[in-house]
Image 1: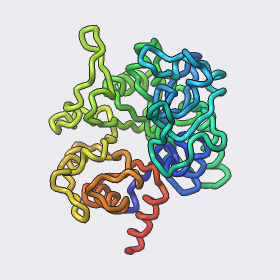
Image 2 (image 1 turned 90 degrees about the horizontal axis):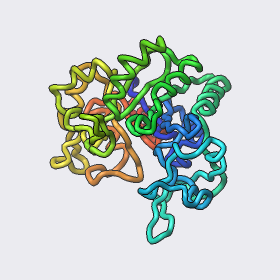
Image 3 (image 1 turned 90 degrees about the vertical axis):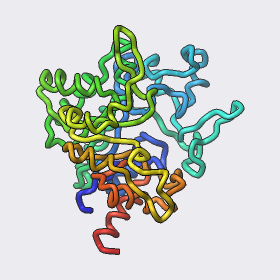
Length: 334
């Protein structure tokens, strides 16, 4: 169990609003070996640390900039400058129910309490590197470019921008403590085949896996259409994927036989072993202690199913302390 990798999903997001510097500080203090960054580009080409490429789930953008939404009603990061984004208050995630904000996860940090703000990728790197220097413990970066296909439709190359920043801060090789991840398989092929050689870089890469076709679009015959997610779940294609990725990050539900799993008896399917047989590490997302599937009585039971039974190499969690404590107890034989 000593080699299992725990990734703090958007920081210690079970305790503080996701992707805030405060959330990253808490995850660092908990001892998480990797902290995740999701990135979207602003109108003036600044890389912003935020999970969505829109703003209305975690900020007060609708109040500060009324009328700036697109036809779909969403307020997109790419339509705002960094100065404008700094005017927004950041909050725990919420949804609107009858015009009222309701937290996505009950019991987490209260909505719009205290003061949190958006920040840039550069600011986060400097923050984490600063913590590494003062604590003597090196936490790594686990970076995701959000919707490269969307940014391409808007005339922006988010992957190139991200890699240039990483290179500037010293992350240039597979020995660097950084993973580069994306759901966008064609963009990962572009990163591996074009950007790495151009920028003289070679980072560890992860292809994120979902069965939701809305996650990624691909250009086909001049039209942007949903990605065929079944392709990434077919073992016949795993050796090809391994030419571009060092590992995969599947939705953990895809790794469990839900039809035959009950509390106390969680049954993995063959997918993890099939990915690993192709030479791919497996880091599933996202384990949440406050959003367990019916077949798991506790988050520790789910950790055991994924790390022990399925044989995953690590996992993403909103509660990195719970995962690290689980591993510690296992090392001690408890």
